[in-house]
Length: 274
Ligand SMILES: O=c1ccn([C@@H]2O[C@H](COP(=O)(O)O)[C@@H](O)[C@H]2O)c(=O)[nH]1
Image 1 (tube, rainbow, N blue to C red):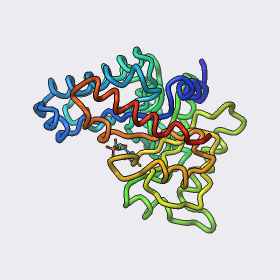
Image 2: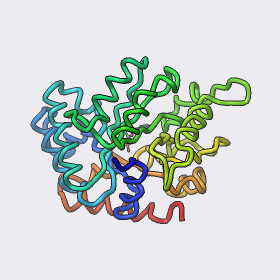
Image 3: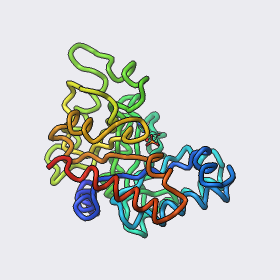
Image 4: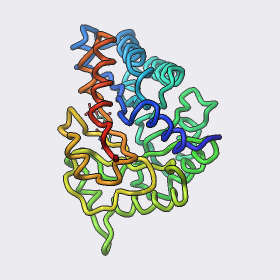
């Protein structure tokens, strides 16, 4: 199986680095003239897939917006995964999973085994039960060519309380980044184990180069800009995936307008990492 890092490098080369989040917020359903029900969730999500999955390299459905509709919402999420991949986009499931190792194995089976109904190209994970508790997910990535994006410096203002906490010279975020660097050692052109680092974090002393991809939420609706990214990420922006949900989704429900918004996002970040 081709490693995720290699597949991602091809996707960036062919389609660009911009990641579109498929987040059916209740407020967006309303803005699109839809109701807050499962039929509307499906209409919204599959319209976004039709518009953006043929043109961007990677999409990121946010699991929570589907989970709130129960099993029928999850059925919509399964279609989002299947149809996005059929259109040629990689799918990064934003589920932020993490638990004791034996339960992490079940998350690995759910999101990283290609035979699972929710099997994706990559998933987001939380390291706060200890990075080693994610081992079953790392192992599943190695076995199936999947990717893992681990929270390091998140885009929300509450994140620093935990992520900047220090033991001796090392912060919690620095520890996570060091584990990722070790997991990606020697991988070419880039490893399969990424960090989540928000576009809104401001200047940081952490070394963001983990020889792996960086998922960069907070771009657009949360205020992060291309200039912020260039300043914060420097050389590490070579493998950065700026991600935006609401800023793109507000262009709907017109398919052409959504696709144009995704293309504009892609064009805006093309020069990063050059
Ligand atoms: O640090 C993080 C990690 C994940 N997210 C998720 O990304 C999108 C952001 O949506 P926007 O509409 O572009 O603000 C959303 O799914 C978050 O759960 C994040 O924002 N920050």
